[in-house]
Image (cartoon, rainbow, N blue to C red; front, side, top):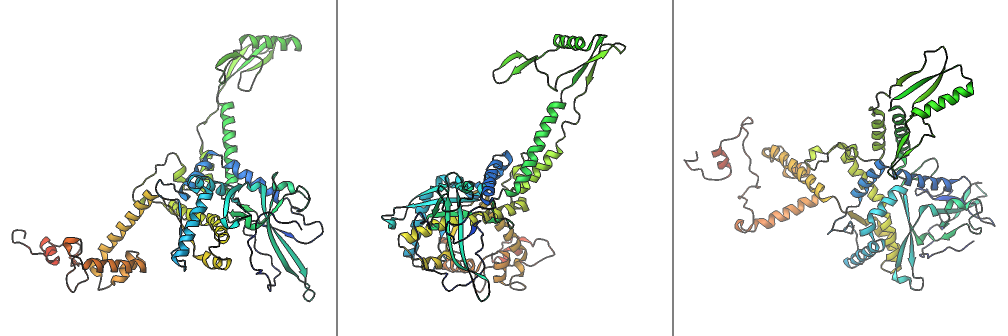
Amino acid sequence: MAELFGFKISRKNEEEGVVTFISPSSDDGTIDIPGGGFYGSILDTDGRDRADTDLIRRYRDIAQQAECDTAIEDIVNEGIVSNESDISVQIELDNLPYPDRIKRKIRDEFDEVLRLLKFEEKGHDLFRRWYVDGRIYFHKIINTTNPKNGIVELRYVDPTKIKKVRQIEKELDQKSSIEKIKKIEEFYLYNDKGVENTGTGGLHGPNQGIRISPDAVTYVSSGLIDGNSGQVMSYLHKAIKPVNQLRMIEDSLVIYRVSRAPERRVFYIDVGNLPKVKAEQYLKDVMNRYRNKLVYDASTGEIRDDRNHMSMLEDFWLPRREGGRGTEITTLPGGQNLGEIDDIVYFQRKLFRSLNVPISRLEAESNFSLGRTTEITRDELKFTKFVQRIRKKFTPLFTDILKTQLLLKGVISLDDWKLMQEHIQYDFLADGHFAELKDSELLNERLNNLGTIESYIGTFFSKEYVMKKVLRMTDNEMDEMQRQISKEEDIEPEDGGIDIPQDTDGITRYPSQGGTPIPPDDVAKYDGQEVDDEEK
């Protein structure tokens, strides 16, 4: 068995005592191969690697389509928001049950991870690569003589040159005659010429690739797995067919318009009783005499004579025998209904729907509004949830690198990491202007609803119910508001405090008068103000 390249973090053998006959789920596209044998196992027998490589290249090809590129940029810009003053992503450790000293070290190491990734300047490109390819690989380089210094460098690995492999060794149970899993070993196989070139030479044959330890590579997949083949798919996978259809329709439309747009003439030349050869020569002489074949060369800006070639866009010259109607010239009309592009629009909208981006963002005729939230469509809400979901799919990139850093530097142990990784979250920077407008409008609508049921608080609705159901406040927000209100009650109104009358809850209730406003003097009375006779 060949040695693994790279470092390996020591861990306990958790498989001891565990008996199963089911292989681990390959939710990241890992290839399962049988273990054992003198010469090693064959990596690719069904062309799986070649298919993966072809898919990645196809994803990159369709990403260059204008409509796809626009959609991808919208998604990436929403996922990774750049700001001059704020960091694109921050680690959230509020739920981590560890001392502040440990939290500070974790935050420092996360900053180091962002520095190694050069995330502030390349975060957009990394997220786009992951989104288009459906996977991303990084080789974690350390100083083997002094591993406690942590990761020295992170190098991007082309996904067409590396593949995650799981080698499963089984043994036959004599009692049940069932093959039980004896040993599972995971590693990455790297081949500079591409993993599809491993062929049938085996994992350990010469020039077949390098076996790399799983701890030395960071791998993040899209999370989309083909249930039939087990291949990792990109989020662009469902756009392959619409893109090809749109390309074909657009190309056929161009060919049709170019070939049918101009009017062409048909020249019927009377050749009399001339023999065939002389008739053809006579027709050619007449055609060369009257045909104007001056063309414009757009590359050089020259006008040249190009009489030696004839295309379908030119006039037709046909011979006519004696006894006919003699020489005649007719005109063929150009194509009709050339301005109809309903089929193009149909396939464009079909492509837009497959890209998970609201059609209103991609259509040139649509205007983007930064107004009220009532103008936000259902598609925008679905798009926001989609961006949040793919952000979570991308965060294992930070988690794996952070884990390696903390373990190498001795900040935590492997057992500690298993307990804390569930409590580590990441806070991505949102589009500030749009989020502010949305929150402002939502608060305004909630306050309007509060004004509607304000007179019923204490009779039909409790104060706590209104805060939870109408104002949509959490328990923590409610407690915080109560603390702040209590604090402000102790401050004089002249100093910024609030004045709440005794034996009241601070809510002013006006009687209902059939939907009509109450008189101004009644408003002042309920507000506790004195009303002058002149104002009455």
